[in-house]
Image 1 (cartoon, helix red, strand yellow):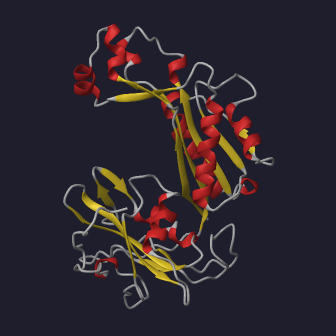
Image 2 (cartoon, one colour; image 1 turned 60 degrees about the vertical axis):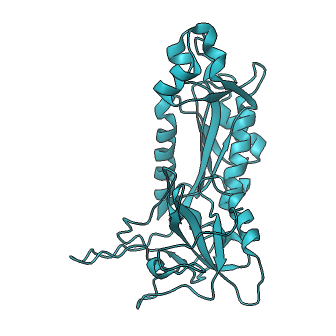
Image 3 (cartoon, one colour; image 1 turned 90 degrees about the vertical axis):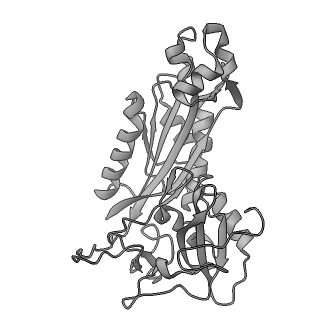
Length: 329
């Protein structure tokens, strides 16, 4: 049994603070951008509650994972700036989320807190003690920042981010053969038990990533790494989708663009625009495929794996995409 991130979310306060806010303490937009790249940050109001942001983030992560509050076994909120000392932020989030049976606690480890939370979630899942774990990083650092010290006041802001972990079927990893590296391949799902170990029905046979030397299976869009494995799970949550493969296609501005070939279930009808909207609501803005097309089938190798390098976008060539005639949605 292994763990996988199956949903993500984020939330920010409404108040945007530009660099000009710090001119009173001897900084300027040019000075700040040159040294940090930061142009603005978000501040939580003095009477604002960090728990509200963490709750909104949790709901996004659950919606993207296909899980419900009843499935959550543990809620972990890493923070050094909770709304109060006790009960902790995680306890309030779990209660308001409706995860009544979940254990909840706040690790106070500053910058490393979220990483420790992730490690804890993996340990719980891989040991079999939990099926779904929500991990959140939530900070309102402006509560403790010296606003007269530009070395700390300038770079710090407030916000939350969360991911949802759950169990995933481990697929055996084939041995690497010298001189032949297989990339971008998938294998068939053979999960016998269905949910919660598989988001589809039991023994569905749909393709899952095989984890076989997929050194090239990353899309770099405008400097952001997008891992197709993370995105590919989301189209499968749509009831009309049978199979989907996410890949990168060339883009004149971003270098690569995230794209997806989708095979529908027999007799089903859904447009690429509807599929884009479905995915866009469940993944981070830079991850959702701007280009989706419907395919009769996905190209397969002799053992049934999907050969992404052979997927041909409409009007393009394998591994190359024709320029879209209009801006992507």
